[in-house]
Amino acid sequence: MEKKITVLPGDGIGPEVIAAAVRVLKVIGKRYNHDFQLGYAAIGGAAIDQFHNPLPEKTIEMCKESDAILLGAVGGPKWDNNPAELRPEKGLLTIRKTFDLFANLRPVKAFPSLLNASPLKREVAENVDLMIVRELTGGIYFGEKHRTEEEATDLNIYSRHEIERIVDKAFELAKLRKGRLCSVDKANVLETSRLWRQIVEEKKEQYPDVTVEHNLVDSVAMKLITNPGHYDVVVTDNMFGDILSDESSVITGSLGVLPSASIRSDHFGLYEPVHGSAPEIAGEGTANPAAAILSVAMMLRYSFGMTVEAEEIEKAVNDVFNDGYYTADLVKNNEHFLTTDEWTDKVIAKIDSNFVIDCIMESYI
Ligand SMILES: NC(=O)C1=CN([C@@H]2O[C@H](COP(=O)(O)OP(=O)(O)OC[C@H]3O[C@@H](n4cnc5c(N)ncnc54)[C@H](O)[C@@H]3O)[C@@H](O)[C@H]2O)C=CC1
Ligand SMILES: CC(C)CC(=O)C(=O)O
Ligand SMILES: [Mg+2]
Image (cartoon, rainbow, N blue to C red; front, top):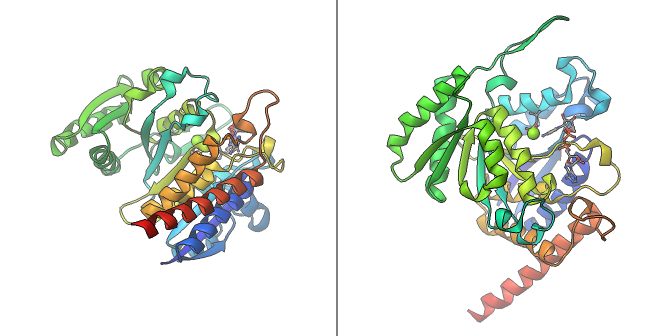
């Protein structure tokens, strides 16, 4: 298959984890005879430095001609005091909005070999397999903003249409999974949440196979780490989803292993780690590339329908953890760890050896 992918490395550890993810993508392309055509473009702080714009028109044009986008992360202290239009995060929000990527899928799966890295008790974190479905192009991050020296406002606004489409997506996913949907809001206080809750109630008639519960976000913040096994699909708004998904990294042991897919109704999508640019470790070669590599797997699955190839990557990542190889974020005290590149080498070696085993098995069948 021939696919065009725009790669946006971004800032901080973004370029480091994306370099790792691209190496894995190329290996998979070679193994399965896919022609992945990669084009690089600027976003975030890197784009501000080069083009005085966090999302240059040239980047948008390249993305429009692509089948999918792979993104690292944006931001860093260098740009923190820039005016709003020249902040790296503005580039990220704008690309999500420009391409109408309203559904952000953030799977949280506990890797058995990482249970020691999680501060949670083994019996609490093990077997967790949940999916946060975060609305990504509306809500408080996109509402009108206003600021004076004395006052500041951020408008939280959601239309019926915006809520309906993300809720539908979550119901559809729940149907394909364990059939449980938890809708998270703050309906005891917010009007946007009351509309959200009403729409979930209306929609549930169309999905009789899915059981629905409504929970307030403050209590979910607690239950997500005391009883994460309770959850299957969690659907929520832009800001609550942002916060809860970082919190869920406590279950997996590190933010560095959480991937995401930002999709819409067709096959186009943007794939990026849940984590940010981690400026304090940028350039050290210690960043965990697993989230970026697993985001590539999500791209193969959701945008290209390459399920076998996606599973190949996910299996390799799991196998490398099982073999006891970790990056710095996953070890305690002075335990040995691998650099970003060394750990990626292990994943690639695993893909190669698993592929050989698959070929031998096939020749017996
Ligand atoms: N999608 C994006 O581009 C995002 C960008 N940001 C931006 O990133 C910058 C830093 O934000 P923070 O709040 O520090 O969040 P962060 O996610 O960059 O880092 C939080 C913590 O996790 C660690 N960490 C994150 N990813 C890691 C990885 N792959 N391997 C090892 N450790 C990892 C960091 O070292 C830090 O201790 C800010 O400018 C922020 O706006 C934050 C979140 C998402
Ligand atoms: C610009 C922010 C909304 C990025 C972020 O934290 C995220 O999407 O997780
Ligand atoms: Mg975030």
